[in-house]
Image 1: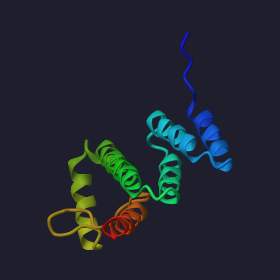
Image 2: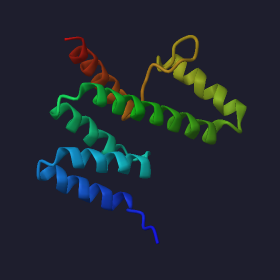
Image 3: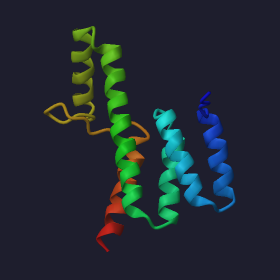
Length: 132
């Protein structure tokens, strides 16, 4: 009989490993937590922090990119879910976003909802570290 570890259990184990400086084990557990519940940003954040501590910038960049990709798709799907059935509401929403400067003329979002915005900044920092 195979038992699966819940997201909360994985986080608890990862935090314990991290507090005992067992960072490699903590990484493994946080990676499993991300797979178990990808819509929860906590595990992504901890992975990014640990990879920075370990100076594993490529791995940190990978975690950032995966998190950004997931949350961009998540927010896009939520928007479609909320407005997709009503074309008029979607048009009004897009017009409002453009008029307030949150979208460019082509309809591309300038504003990034959290956690995407802070991860975009973190990504720039990691890219600078990788260029050194």
